[in-house]
Length: 347
Image (cartoon, rainbow, N blue to C red; front, side, top):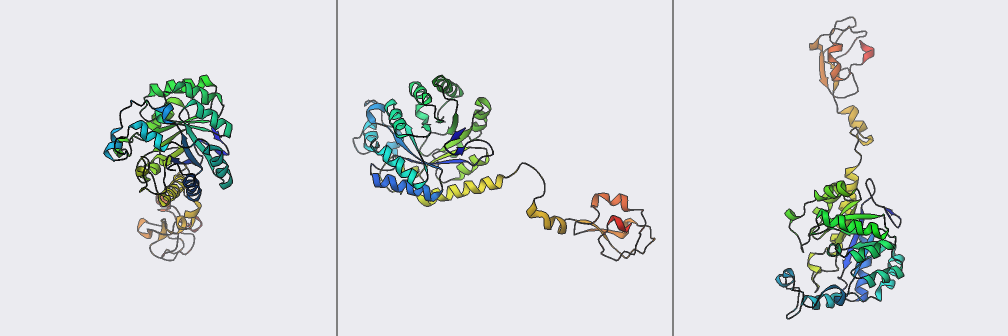
């Protein structure tokens, strides 16, 4: 699939999304600083989220236990109150998109209601990211799909059946460009709950590009995902983990985001080619440091060569060691000095 100028798939650079989420703290200057950090780190896209408490949660929804445990909700707050406190002012969208264009990075956003899709369309968004929690919001999937824009669909908590139903809704909407992101829902998840091999299963089952949306600390999981074939990486980041808000504690700080992206790009270079052969960089030592057949003693011309007259030494540009049996019993055509590198012309 293609998102703007980026081709997404095997043997293409990993598409890296820096997830700002709600870490702007409802401060527009903070949102711009997050974009600057994503640009400096080398991300391909920076992503925000458009949601309203009224459209996403019933006021009677129980509080998420991790918010209580980590003291990310204030005293007497409901889950609805927490979401209301961190929602993005919707009028920011066109201005944030314009700032991204100015800075040369792609703007993405995750809509959480039908109105948000209309707002993103009006702003001219190039692709849609759908959160794991919304994989069962089939009306929104159909509406997004009807735009004809590429869709990146996270699959945290989803079964293969959930994904199949969601992809059916996308197909009904008319879109043919979709990628799936494996995801472990916890903030942060344990390593043993990541199960990166599930990416292989999704790729085999649905024949679409597959990536990874990550909530772990650090970047070892992201590097492992790229090494396993992830075409897209999405990672939360923040200006500082010391800020107040539910997403800051598991987000990367600016220098960590840059380190992650550097590690991913290094990993792509390390993965290299599937061909097993010596490289151009190995040419000199391929000749010098491999072994070949060398004269163990002086061998006068006309002498029948015995095994005792041959040594296996470096360099490697003489007669290959595997041909020793052919050399034994042959006659020296010329005087061969001790430590001469044997060549076919000598025998």
